Length: 597
Image 1: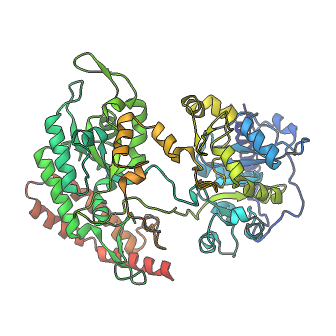
Image 2 (image 1 turned 120 degrees about the horizontal axis):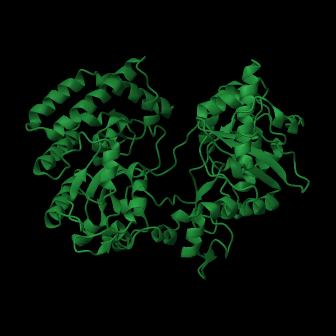
Image 3 (image 1 turned 90 degrees about the vertical axis):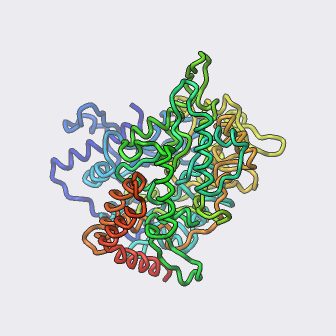
């Protein structure tokens, strides 16, 4: 059992031990405190290994003291699941020798995040650092050290956010106690994957049509219809599905939210915020009742009645939906990339047998998807891709009041953000994990890529410090991406040849280039879906929101299946108005106004 697993075992031991002793929660002095007054917390004795309270099947261990080699060692516990590293990890040791610090990362193991947080607090034994999506339990129990003075002392940390953005992390006592900095872009936004919603299409469809420019919903469905008529079956004889979507539970957003995008607006998740009258007068609009919404659902209705849309779309489960997509039969769909694409990778590389006995893979066939940022009217701008990073101010990396050397911990966090250490974290060791071309471009060989994706190799060699602050974007050389997956040559190396050929024809290095969304810095209210998702039925706006959601969930499939669309649209609008949507729209307008002040 390695140290990461052992540390979680130790936490469980203490949670059981302290709960049986009816201990109260720890009450520290973290609020507003910069340093720990030079007092190191008690390190756990080896005697704990003989405790009768050990959880069956888990072996407790000893918390290490600072090492004799001059390298200080800290524990970081992540309330997320992650990759464990071996006790001796090559790149972690290089970083340790460079910075004087080694961090032992522990991850969730047979526990939920809430269970882990509760166990830690109940035990009174804290790791030096903790990463959690929600740190308020630690904050409310005075278990965290304030960052304020350290932000002024360490410029790399301070540079992660603007002064205004840092204010989002400030708590009601006037201090900052954590930061979530995993999705910050340095020098340039270089993301390569459009991980958001789009109308997706298989590259073989575009290739067959001579790589046309598809901008509108009408053009999209016209191409899917033509291709499916000319190529009705897969090589194994199974019929293609021109278009499908999912209506199950909360995933119905992939069908209901399209009107917002088709009108050229970004994903606020619950409303359109129109700034055409000026940023000081943004107007909230209900995208569910616009002319575009009616035209969109009319189009889906027409395509369903023509046989273009999967006849089972309204009743299929998510598993059934994913099962269809992974067969390569689905030519097009509307969904968020993360919700479907990662299921394709294992299936698309498998050898399949055609009716004539030849073998093929779905990758070779051109079944990989690329995103289209469709609009309703030709020539309109679109914002399907959201630039800039969302800020999760609820949680992130925190330093606890039991960290035995906070000064060194913060200095290490600062060091992790230097180009030298970022290169080690994400590219590895030169000539072992990557090469540098004569033009100064970082690249990997196929063997290096295989190594970096191999779990055994990663356990012993790589050290990303995944949940600790990091930059994405460009190194200060202005050439190389900090993340290899965003380096153009490396991004394309992971794609099929038909997909690479498709990107090249359209002059795109990646999916973000391909979708071609208008660049727009996020407004102060973006994204509003964090606000709407937090509403409860205890408020009038929350009650209206949930009723609106239930109404759409019931009526949208009916609209697509309808044999009398105009009549059913009128019935839908009547049912929708009974939900009192204006109460929600007014509350959304007030939220936007509040974020502008």
